[in-house]
Length: 385
Image (cartoon, rainbow, N blue to C red; front, top):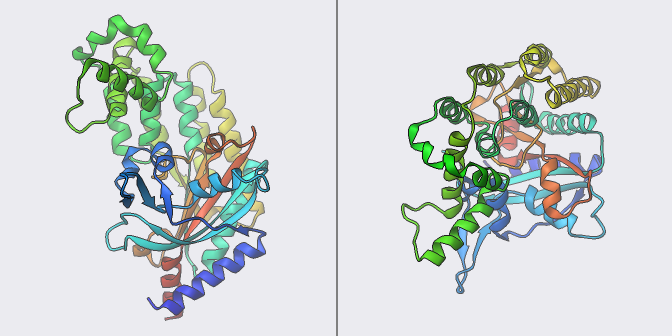
């Protein structure tokens, strides 16, 4: 790909963000690792390119923009109330096969108090417009909703440690199915935790990394070293999982079947909504928060239609999630049916739950998307060839 083609793709996307009222934000290339690992999980560490200074301090080359943009704008008194922010620059991480470790990424974040459904629709519409501007003619739009899965697990009273694990695995159906199978078939070896059910129950209310810090202190006092390459937070998570199986009843078969049926839903938006609604009578004790999340699904579909998005082009997959762990609501990918090998050219979603960790005011919401600029440039080249 020529530099001229990439520059043209960058210019087209930049003009679209400017026309939509987005303010450019500059983000340093060298960043502390802590936020990325804490928010996106230990698995993301393997994708980060790390540098170590002479004092042994680890930093990383910028692996993505959303987290540092949020930290930067919410830490600035002038922008703390939110706004529309765009970015443009290289990201560095272990990429997918055939793709370099550094690629040019652009994107936008909408942060503040806003109507969820309308802003979700606006963001997807903007991403679609940017892709069309580079020659996208046969859009393949995949949508998901992390919040629906979270509300379903809540309605089924899944123990906290297991819910955290399932939410971390969401987007990887094989791992989710494996975990659900374990929850329906406890093993006798877990019985050793039964006498400590009350203590384990209290610990399970905290994130594994916090429990891991406690374990680390206990091991340090005892002079014990961890073995097998596992961190104390990983050990803590494993203990909490096993203890939950001992302290709780196994997951009823009908609950496991309900999760499986939910994850099997993949259809255009309107048909998907009907299939999701058909699950409501099967939820024990009333649908509650799941029904509320489904109302938001309906409102978003209507907002997408009002925004001019052809909703028959949007396929909802209940098992679709992003590899970055901070997404907690609507998510989407945009690709071109004519060029499936390119993969997604735009993708993003909602991450309201990330806001409190950066000191945002209560009720602050956030949704955004990234543009894979090299892929857009390649798409433009195919459209003109």
